[in-house]
Image 1 (tube, rainbow, N blue to C red):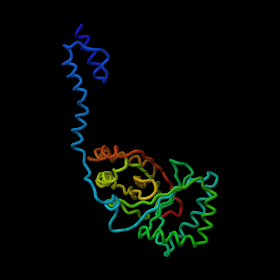
Image 2 (cartoon, rainbow, N blue to C red):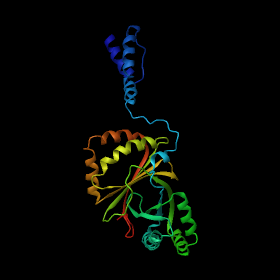
Image 3 (spheres, rainbow, N blue to C red):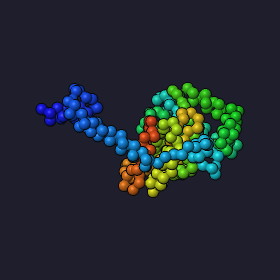
Image 4 (cartoon, helix red, strand yellow):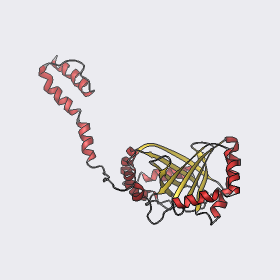
Length: 286
């Protein structure tokens, strides 16, 4: 009878609930069983001793993670287009945006312009670089307000859009500089919403992780937000096609150290999204 009660009480203790009172003679055994249920917590505490810690900082993470040799600022635009206007939208963008890109009076360059293929549909994505940071951005905006062709472009564009949003970004110091490339390629924009306060830790891990993803020249650029939706990270990749993407990503798992870096960065993420994008004909990134 005592053995039966012990089995019942042990099962209840392991589940975290004691369903019935046990004889006093069984309490030491129950205490031993209860203490064993704390082992996962103890193991978790011990494991935390080996997790890489980030020292407290007295400086903004933008000063610690961004490239020091440049003062470039990036603007990432997301335009959700009315489905029936997508072709017309692409047409006017390909007519007007390259003129701004090529005009030396504007201290900015068009890094890339795409339509989302897989992900949010009927969406256009534009990435601009402003050489000189916020003053360059202000200068461009002031000049565009006096550019009659651009004003007409904005007016025509407004009738075609359902919604739009943008973010101002800085470039991670350890990522590639986005430079024009020939195609054809597809592009993947992987966007990560991080937990507040984890940007430095993310940077610590990805400064090592990026070396695992350079063999096939797929890394285009890595950015983190300054204005707009905060604690956002964007990684931009280029692939020949979807199968090549699959093969390259699978190959990373066979490299020693990659799985550890993924293990430690996943808990930093609140939400993530992947877009597969096709460049427009006038995009510097083809």
